Image 1 (cartoon, rainbow, N blue to C red):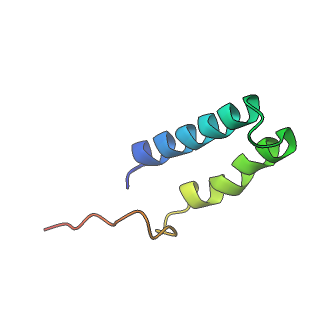
Image 2: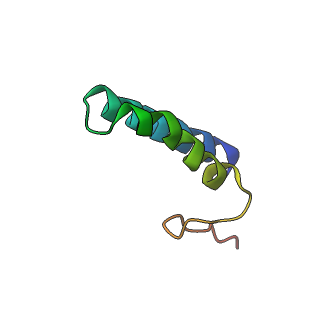
Length: 58
């Protein structure tokens, strides 16, 4: 996953959290601190999420 994918992933997660908070699906306090929990997984250099497959290079 390159830097563009990481940036798009982080932006999508932040927008999704904001939309959920606007419609009162999640509390406002959770929406304020949730992005802080997401950043280390997106910024880290290693693949910490098993849902994201590593690209195989030939």
